[in-house]
Image (cartoon, rainbow, N blue to C red; front, side, top):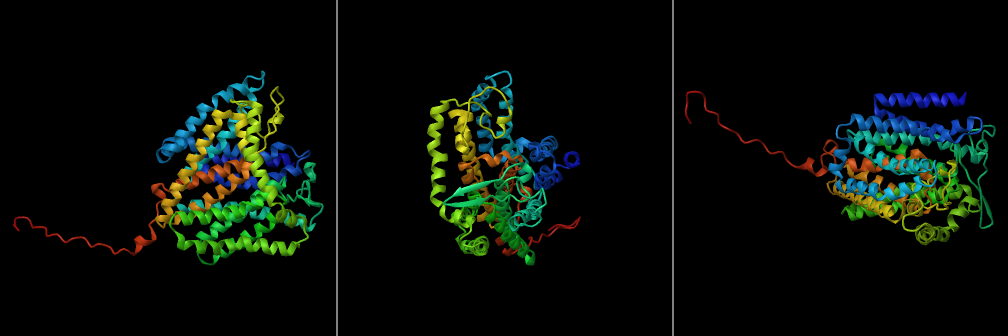
Length: 473
């Protein structure tokens, strides 16, 4: 029953996306919230159930590209460097595609998987660029995401407290795993709640906390206090997940946000930002007090700082040299290290790379890695250009841009250590979508009146004397 119900929901959402792709994006967010509970209800907990957002978002991409006038050309007009670097990446990735397709008769499947994996986030970026027609559209999307996944984060609380022990949708038992990490003499039980793993729950907890904080920062009136509360609640779920790399998204976001305001010449706003960031840090302090300093999770987060730095060094730098020694200049081929490739049973070299940087090198080789780096650099420079311009103009878009860019920077640091989270199509598309939303904030239809422009006095039109017919001046 659960199988047919999930398939029906996906089919209906894909059909609805054909009529309105912007509504389809909101439906993708909802499906991402319910797909893992449905997976746990389906006998055998099949992996495909956790990919339920893929067909709906694929339909969103197709419809938006076919119905949006100048889908690629307008994006290229506003972001010429990003567009040029994307074309360069396609050309530099051709050797990697040829290599993976030539291993055996069926290895072309690896090539297709790798191509979809890399292009997915960039296609989502272009969709995000065209999504908002006004600033309220961006805010509505963030609200839907925070509300939908804020509700689902309650599963982590339920699992930790031992409530509803008979629910199959809580924890990992239905999937057939019991995640446990042993470190420093402690047993850390990974909490997943309604999600399929602690990684996924931790990522959504961090995202809900930071996006709710952004909604509070850009909101007005008493409603902003609801978003403050939701941000604090999400921090509680984040502290329970047992995944340190997700917890560290919070301080990286804080550092990035302060740096952006400072570099944009808005130093006067830095203290207001610091006051806002007191919400997640106070939530961490309260969570630590409630769990107790003897808690395995708290001990894990507070004593593993050196290990985290070592992981960044190993996965980000040391393993790059080892990867090059293993696969050479042109790499092992597109798709050979893509999450999910183990389900394709064809002859191909064995890969062990987990970090984002090493995965790019082993799959794309040196040429493709250089092209990918160029894409990331041009995206970061474009994001900085938009954010700086909007902050200096004192527009409402500037606050959204600063928050979204800081969120992206926090994820980049986490992906260097482990890129496995991008195996989730929704998370990959959501990150790309956030990039596109930020780049769209300079489009004319989203332009807002600067705050200082409202104080400028209006200039009265100059009086003119118009002669009557038959008269002279």
